[in-house]
Image 1 (tube, rainbow, N blue to C red):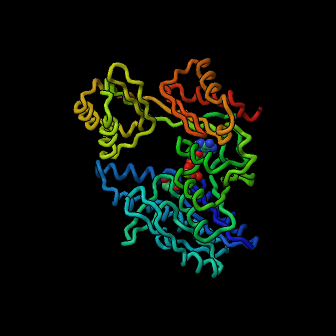
Image 2 (tube, helix red, strand yellow):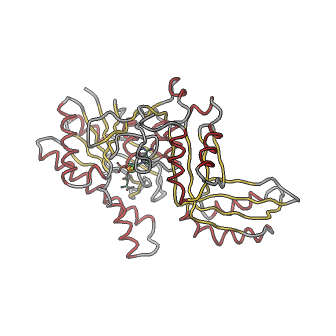
Image 3 (spheres, rainbow, N blue to C red):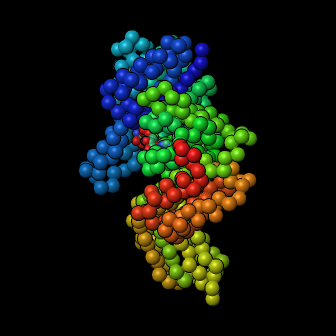
Amino acid sequence: MALIVQKFGGTSVGNPERIRNVARRVLETQNAGHSVVVVVSAMSGVTDGLIKLAKEVSPHPTEREMDVLLATGEQTTIALTAMAINAMGGKAVSLTGAQAGIITSGVHTKAKIANLEPHEVRRFLDGGFACIVAGFQGQTEEGFITTLGRGGSDLTAIAIAAAVQADLCEIYTDVDGVYTCDPRIVPDARKIDVIAYDELLEMASSGSKVMQSRSVEFAKKFRVPFEVRSSFNSNRGTIVKEESIGLENVVVRGISIERRQAKVTITRVPDNPGTASRIFTALAAAHVIIDVIVQNVSVSGSTDISFTLGADELEKLGPVIDRVAAEIGAGEVIKKGGIAKLSVVGIGMRSHSGVAATLFECLGNGGVNIQMISTSEIKIAVIIDEDLIEHAARLAHAAFGLEKSS
Ligand code: ADP
Ligand code: ASP
Ligand code: MG
């Protein structure tokens, strides 16, 4: 008998029939003699709908109230899922994040899990119940409702699997697993059988929203292996685990894309110690999140600095960057939306050369101009025009031989 955590995302609980489908799967697992903790998301579209509703009553709702509102989405699903299981003759109880023992920091809308004491989960499991836990939510020490960032139900599932020392953690979603690229963009993408935490972490944090990146970080830290698989069939999915020797043989594991980025260039920045610090300290103080930063080699005492950020951050950035540029005596500030990032990821890059050459060659031959380049040990990312991102993803996918047919 095993203890299994199963997480079902929004599409998998998107309507009553799908919730009954989840209930059947949970019952099958229980009938096979296992204990089950089920983590569910809000039904698909519900969280977005709640955000829209909030904007209709207030242009800038407080994050505290957003959390109270958004947590209702998952609360609906836990009740419906428990009801469906009970109606099929099973034994299930619903638990909110707080009831499941999830204590978080007080940073509303992106709270961090500070502690998880799953006493109630254990008590109900011992009583033969399936525990249906609301994903994405927790509470502060003081008892205020918090949420864990978009896609946060993944984090709930991984954290509970770690806390109850589950034998198995399964993330059920609307695709068969983690693919070499988002199958909606590259139809020929291939399902990956095994991927290392670091690879999925790079992919998730550079736009592959199949798993929330913080959940992968958590899984790596607490060594929770998990499987990403489909809730609509019984195919084996993708195992996500620590890296092992065989995994390094593959140079490029996958490709991610991130749309809706913007690029800012500050020209003629005086080339003095402390100038970059003044720019980025001011941006950090305004809570602007920066991604890729590039500084040119200085010519005659000044240089250009460019960086990228999410297009949504531009509004916050505008007044701050104009002020700092004037203070440091720089030239122009050029802000440009409509760009995107393509990242090529694989732990095999540590020990293989030529990945950058292949990437740049295929993009060049395909007429894609590279505006910025950034690398890490296991990733090469390029900034390009957003209009060309799907074309570029397909070119790179083929150049690295990632298609199903190869
Ligand atoms: P859930 O609601 O189950 O959490 P998500 O919508 O968050 O599901 O994640 C699943 C989606 O992630 C897929 O439908 C797919 O379009 C997208 N996706 C992006 N990149 C990848 C990838 N590399 N492999 C698989 N799916 C991906
Ligand atoms: N419902 C939340 C969201 O849409 C959390 C999740 O689905 O994981 O982001
Ligand atoms: Mg998700």
